[in-house]
Length: 305
Image (cartoon, rainbow, N blue to C red):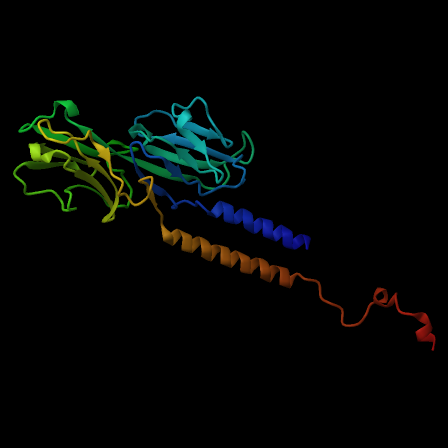
């Protein structure tokens, strides 16, 4: 029984270390103002005492520790907006564009000890918007530019290098069609992660919705809606406003690589089979005839008769 428990604990440890192996990188997309969860895929101690979260982005300087041994570092600029979840995920509330970057979940079994297992990085990118002028300065027959860009670990409007996902930004109208071939509209694409819509606003554009949509691998991921007041119109609302039609309630999602999951399952199956075969081969043989200790309890009077 002790051997079985030992092998079971070994198998559990291997499972924990294999979750989040190299190649299981997450690409996570969210919007300014949303809340987001960064999953840790290599947890060893379930109480998160082994978990450390590091943050880095290009041009930011040194790698900064956000969480150490499961505790938020109060020296972090975003400490007030961070929380460690029960599964050791990192929760970021009220996301800002400067939160974009690479967050890496690491495991240290002892304070000051060596790194255990592989890193589990999360590439967080933030969809961001801006207007070329204050909303109050918008007047009919004057152009206004609606800028939309993805803030990544490489900077604003810069797509991540070395990432396999196909990223695309598009401006779409209220009917969901891509905006183009309209004499009042001009779309300027600086890069796949930076696009600007310039509109010569009319009174009938009051409360009209223009949407900046982020596609990943050809599928809609998240979006931002622009609506604003046009002076002289009967009704008006302030803008821009965020879309509520993104795939999830927080406007976030992550891209996983199912092939790595299949490989992990296969490795675990093989390891379990090896453990079972080893236990069967090393099990002591059962005796064919009773040993002296096996008949110690037999009634001697019966034998004498």
